[in-house]
Image 1 (spheres, rainbow, N blue to C red):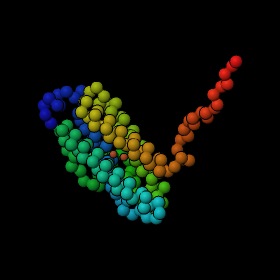
Image 2 (image 1 turned 180 degrees about the horizontal axis):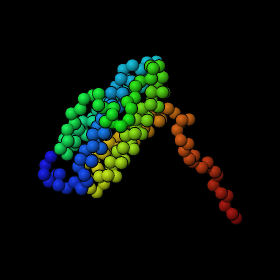
Image 3 (image 1 turned 60 degrees about the vertical axis):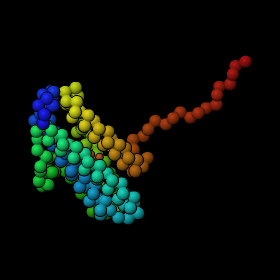
Image 4 (image 1 turned 60 degrees about the horizontal axis):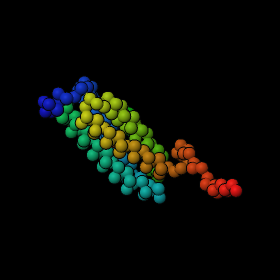
Length: 179
Ligand SMILES: [Fe+2]
Ligand SMILES: [Fe+2]
C-alpha cells in the first residue's frame, strides 16, 4: 500500500484487516452457498429462486473481490484455503435444505446470512467513520447492498412473515363546512 494512503488511516491497521478478512470469508461462503442452492433447487418455487440466487451469488463474489483488494492495499494477504472459510467467517456456512424443493426455507436461511453481513458491515462502518474514509466508503457500499438483499428476500417470503408496518390512516370525507 502507498505510504501516504497508509499514513492517513487512524485505526489499527491489523485490527481493521482482521475485520475485513472476516467479511471477505463470509462473502466467499455466501457466494458458494447461494450458487450451490441455485444449482440444486427444484420445484415450482425453486425455479423462481434459481435465477435470483445465481445473480446474487455473483454479486457476493464481487463483494469478496472488493474486500480482497482493500486487504491487499492495507498490506494484508487474501490468499486462503477453502477449509478455513467457515472458521474465519465467524458464522456457519448455509447448506441447501435437504428438501431441494423447500424454496421458502432456503430463502429464510439466506436472510440469516444477510443479517450477519449487515451487522458486521455496520460495525466496521462505525470503526472507520472519520478515521479511514476509503474503507468506510467500501463497507457503506456493501452495507447498502446487503440491506437491499435482505429487503428483497423478506419480500419474497411475503407480507405475513414480515414485521407489521403502520397502515395509512383511512381517507375520510372532507369535513363539512360550517355555515
Ligand atoms: Fe455481500
Ligand atoms: Fe447479500
